[in-house]
Image (cartoon, rainbow over all chains, first blue to last red):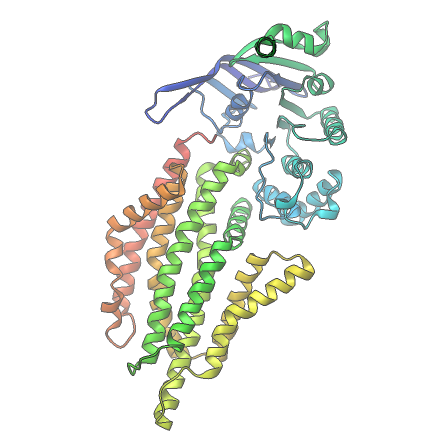
Length: 253
Length: 293
């Protein structure tokens, strides 16, 4: 295993099954993917293309039906591998009964940080995501943007080497979106490896070095953003198509 | 260890922040306090009535808190996705399940300690009231100060929690639950009787044991099944099928002088251990075998 290889997927497939174990849907089909150290890699695709399933297999939350997944050369099930990554889920999954400070402290605890270190790091992160004023308020009353910032701070609390972002700007206003993009760029500049999914092509174009486009669980294109030669949106539509728009146009006509 | 502490702390806070737990606590304390205080018939054994009211409250309320607390916290973690975020960190699924189950036990222990301490105060009040009645030749009633302390254990914390919520944004339910425990401990110290405590606390501990079996079952099956109702039903069936519950015929144990004989207590405890261990192992198997979607 190359030391510079952070994520490696070889021939990975995932089939969801029903209660009787009959195959229901092939969410990912024979996917090969590698992400090198320091890269900002974008996993793009329309809804239902298998982006989140791929991410969950990388995180060890889902077991692949076929193929192999490794992060830092280890199984994603291994605690050592997961100690080196931070994860921002698609929806800001937060415990509603905890305050913003307690939430970040909770994740600091999961990262095995000493209490004094965790408290200091929590203070820094609350300042970074501009939530110092509401640090002791329950997150249940937070807006979507505020909850997203708490989730982002929680993902960064263990100073991860690999940051996995599932739709990082989902539900954010333009100002917050810009802030998140700037932050991800800054983290990448400091050498952090970032894997992100998005269906917002502008985000991927701004942030990513390398992208892979998924459609119905398969990779339909992969390459460096700078090598695409056309706008990412045009490239994406050429690869994935916009069949839904045509159906809608027919219906409206 | 730090990971475990974080999970236990967050789980206990979550369960103690559940409005359902506070409602059950207030209802249990009201039964334990008011049932012996407001009886209409004299059977000549007010302290025994107070003790039985406490045991009933602990058995029924405890079963609800243990089952609902464990089942709801596990289901919510999996359904809301907070389990994804936790399991994506450096914590194994087995450790996550076991630490979280311990967090449920901590919350349950806070509940059962509150009810037990209030019951202890009420039983002591009934004993003092009975002695005074015998001296004066009047009808036995709960001793006034004990009754006031027992009622205060669930009324004052509610008012204090409301004030703390209003002026300092403290979380009402969690604060009320914790203040109830403090008030119950303070109240029981006021009229503390060591002999009575030695006699009664094992009885209350024995009453809490079936709830621990239900708690472990609810936690395990909440990981496996998608519905709280299904996991609750399965854990009740599993718990009923376990030989451990055969030991909870408290009336047999208490009939001899109102205390639980030590061999009986040990036998009950030893039958609890394999039952809880078996259910926790089932939970570990379920959480390791499933996709976290």
